[in-house]
Length: 363
Image (cartoon, rainbow, N blue to C red; front, side, top):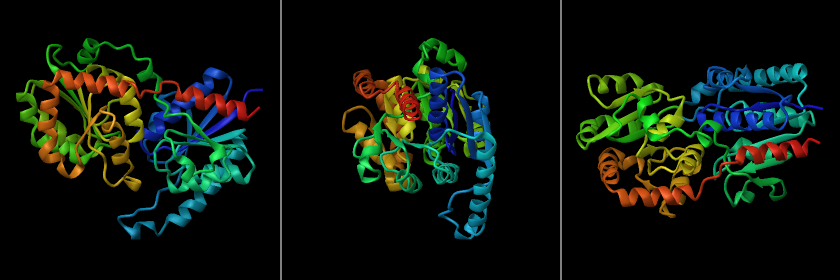
């Protein structure tokens, strides 16, 4: 009998893309599995999930706003409303299981599923678990993690070390460097720098590239620059009339961007790290310093300690990032060292592991 499964979460690509990878792996095991996503209205998942071919229901929910307490006044009402919406969705869909991948919508969905005695599964991508996942972990059927030592957050017996699911388009890419470069209408004879601040962009990285764009181009590099929405206009304006610069707020076909890249600059979110291990690229991480428990710095340092990446702190990026990029681009020996070492850390079958364990626990 085929199962009906709800997958909840989102907010950033780091939650959405692993969720889609798990959904695809569940479908590979049994093509008749019915999958329904639940996300937060107005967030990225409402666009990205339907593009991947899945249905999604949106909840009226928002997270706790740490910067402006006044904005939290309506939060209890939104939470109550989202629980009522979840109850209605569950009554109509009748799921056999619920999977939470992090993000605002995960909590009410898994909380409701647990109160209804429906098996729940959590995927925690970071080395520091989020507060809502820690609460949900107590009653979860299984908790999939990407790093060792997660017993300090979750019951040890429920933990399964799976790694982070990387989207199939990247794992199975097979795109040549020439195809990648041509995709962005760039020059096949030049070295290419890829700058990504995560799906929502990264202000400091963008400002550092903006400030020293001429230095990047004068060094003979060309640029693929994913700015995120907030910086898109500025980035496009800055690149106007310059050869060898591709700018967009979001790159949906990242397999081409990774294939084109000789050097990558990125934040150090768990999913970005997982993808860069799979594609084996020399990377300079600029960890986002305000991530919970500063986990991006922890992620980046783990790779730096294995000579698998370079790192510059957010506070020093404006001064140091572009000189580091130019130096690395010119140093083929260092680039090859980083490529070989980051490649050793790749996990390509995490989504399959997660899907198989979920199915095994539902028999």
